[in-house]
Image (cartoon, rainbow, N blue to C red; front, side):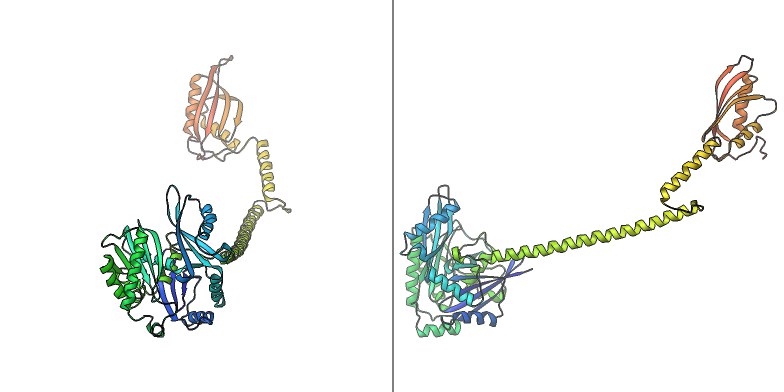
Length: 507
């Protein structure tokens, strides 16, 4: 399900907001909103009505502090461990500012790591300023996940560029009151500085112009002063002049920045490129012209959707820590518990339905067994266990067959039928005495005497001619003491034989 991110820039003169909609794979810029600040005393009410009037709703809220409320320092620490950095940065920063650690909130952004240590950009805000900022947002019904520093947040807008960024470049962004200058080398942020370009309390003419269209009137002298400040800032950040035609992306509001672009080309020799004139990804054409004006809230929102490559700090530290994540975790665990219970109920229901289905099938099979039983043993009056009773009756019948002289042969004929067939097959000229007669389901075995060896061969041939036997074997042929011939016959029964057929074919 798409999630909406709202980034707010609550300045002394204007409210700005950018909304980004994120999905599992990508994001898109939804809208920009702005309004001049009417009164700082009624700011919370104005923020609430501002969002309601523009029908802005979001799943995640971010905000930024204006540049004049935050102090920045860049320094190097001879270690890389994050835990040691967390412990050391506040004390290192305390030595450079006239405030105690109890009066400030500190966070930092890692600029560069090497084998020996880490260069950090540390940011500091007075506790009372942060409390006041959060109080305004809480009164407006908002609980920001991140409270960033506007000059850092705006740098993330460069991730919108579709073209690959060069190795070294400048980024300059501003409003009618402040301008931010950032230097990148090796595509890594080297440093950033905020420059005041107008008095803290602008003149009535400027206020009227801003209230009307958000643009201060062009002032050539002010632009010249700003160019001089930018030159000194670049010299300090780069430790020397920039290479000629170094790319410089410019994002700013109003005609003053058109004058600034020309002055930067002339005085610094850089290749100025307006951000709105570049190809930007995921920005609708209707909003592309306003990207420069909303660079700070847009960059802040982009930090949330690209957290691994984002630039910024978060002053929600210590007692100001954002707890919505923990609340969301508790709600997620509660929802997971409910889903687990629902899954368990579904499993139990499925098992019960499977059991009921199997029980119905078992009842049907048992009914069929009972039907077969009653048809097989119609005289049985008491039925306890069909299988056991059927097996008992089968065993009893088998024993009765054994008592009668053996199991029924595969041909279905009885012993008398087979003896009659043998007698009918032998002509009257052949005399045979049988001493032993054994019958099993597959064959008949006889121990007999004949008048001669020729008679034995004739007996075998006559029995084969009946076609009643599948095979006739003569074994243990030998002369007896009385002059006759002893022999054994093994007659293999033919299951397709016709019972009682004599050699002549008569019944």
